[in-house]
Image (cartoon, rainbow, N blue to C red; front, side, top):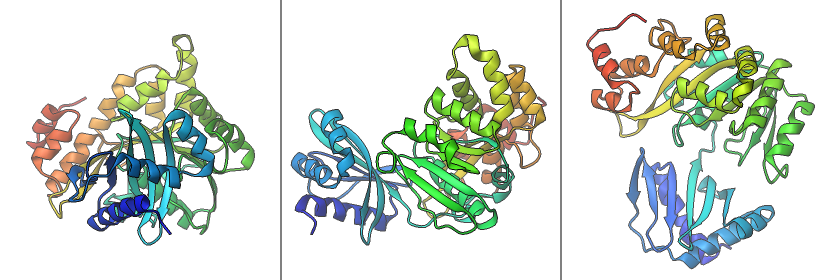
Length: 363
């Protein structure tokens, strides 16, 4: 039977899930907050005491993470509540009190159609036999859901052995045509470093890495790509240009020529995503920037002309590569989003303003 502290949090979680909230925020001494369609809303409830927040974490953090919580005063773990759902939890201290942020993890793996995504550009990348595919965006931009939709399609259509390294596991997959091995850091393997070192010995066809976090991770991804594996991972970057810049930041200046060769040889593509307020139903719709690393793109990376890649995105006329502005134009013309929101979320609103008037400049 749940303790009073856990019951308080569970009631908040149920309200959040019933309302369609994506995130739940608890700050000691305040009522709970939820994030609905990207906006923060206070819940009409009594303030949650610090002792209650502390008790919830103490009671529900997995035993293997208890020392980390005691020593570091912050911890990530997964929490499941029967009849309500699963949640990704980050608990931490602020000003001596406990705060908790929880992300609702949907029980069913989404399809492209459910996410409002046109499948074609994603399938072109998902069908790759090897290479590195990066799904990029800010926190809360739907990276994990888009990645899950790609794996869902692969599971239904291709015969693959897929090993995932996640912290924590978000979507759980049921084997269909594929065989999944989902490893949760801390529960199935002590550390991410040990998991990444072992993954190439586990005979995968596809490796999912929860986040491309450092040079060691990226170098392992390159090794996997060079030996015939497809590596899918996420990275915190807003655009393709920022994503490329971040990859090169993993390497010291004297190794940049070698880095250009490795990245050009292994990169398969970038998917960058933002969630834009919808004109229909008060939800959000995804807008994407996609770069498929064809021979032209690989040659530009190899020669160090990263700045020319934006021209390929802006001038794209097919579904293989296109910029955020191109996708924002599509969504605006389809009355999925407002012009004001398109301009607000555009990385280049001045150019978008001209584009919406039918004016395009040759690159």
